[in-house]
Length: 358
Length: 227
Image 1 (cartoon, rainbow over the protein chains, first blue to last red):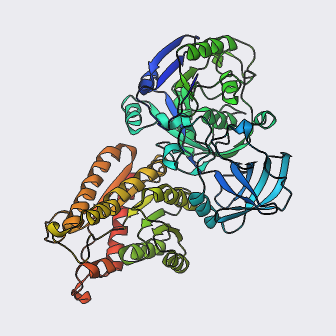
Image 2: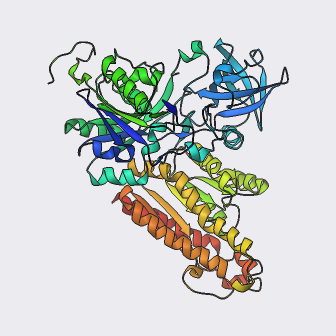
């Protein structure tokens, strides 16, 4: 695929590959994504706003430059200013993460000066790049420091430096995501209006989307990290109502799949509240809540791609990948999209055996 | 009902400060924005509100401001775009108004509120979906309607803000986000003193009175949305 290298959330020529429940493939202009849904369906999106989670500064013990990428947090609470973080040595996003220098050795208690902020290394997480950090000062000052000093996390395929307005989706609310829940870039006012007019519901969850790539295969294998989320009771009620009328639950992005499936894991019924999504979703996952996902286009080695195998069998996904490649679809967060309908409604709740639909 | 979450721009003087005080008095959680760090810290301390240093006229400040508002309040129910620029001081005829002064007035009074509203629309819409209601109050002026000589930059900017409020309201009513454009009247504020230094303060409305009226209107709009 071709890298989506310009920070345009809704390029006029954006494309959509629809993988329908029967495994059929259809190409469409992405701006018409709402027309692929049915009245009575419920669209659920992640309304997390994106933090400027890349913080440049200095490791005070050695004087060495570092780039800290905040990557995870135990909760969504504003007073919680402890983070898991990936730390790089000198350099910035222009260098491919695979080629980034390691940070200086980080010992417990080491201090990092990050613009107006000071962070302390609180824990090692089994890799020289991955630590837990806590910031000094009251929470308000920490968020102010991050807001003013941080930059959005970005990767070497981009051509320009990103600003927050490039990465906040049109529905961005609580600032808890470490990277943009970019499937939500499609949610402009026009499409929300179209959903409403067509009798398609719209609801949101908030999930602190974590970092998507560290450049280190051992660390990448641990992604996604645990992600705290909140499901408003109004959203839980909307999901239950949609299910009752046999409408489909259409997730905008893999983060929404993770939140809804975590919340509905035990009974298949989604209740409002907070949780921490710590599960993996793959070919062995029986989806209990979500019926379709609109996502970016992902390469087979990415964790997002693995999640799609909960929706469709490998042969269909392989055909879809070949199609994306052949038609020159763009990938990454500013690229084109896929809409994947689930076939595994035909599976039992254990998720492995096919049985007839109810 | 959990406490109302309110953000106010220009919260360290005049009507904005009175609004901080009024919404705090009513038990709301308040975040406010102003340009001067010392004044922000002082108002935050006295009124137990969350102070944010920033300039709504500067585009790069908008998202850091929006981020701090929603982080501090955990969401947002009410946005008050109160911060205003008078334009050239002393007031000037349009023929004598520098283009740069006009631009700055539009940045503060029109583009700032547009950008901040846009950045916070996700949080406001979330509040509406959750049944809490959502209101944006844009502080207007009779100069938005009447043509007063020497009030060109200010009057044109306030007319634009007023019309923008009406269009936002038209477009977002279905989402449950309501827009109010209200004229608080001639008040005894620093902005008024800049415009008309010779005015007798005794003849002017006290900002606290105007703040009470505006807060009533906001609460009423939220209640209407619930009904």
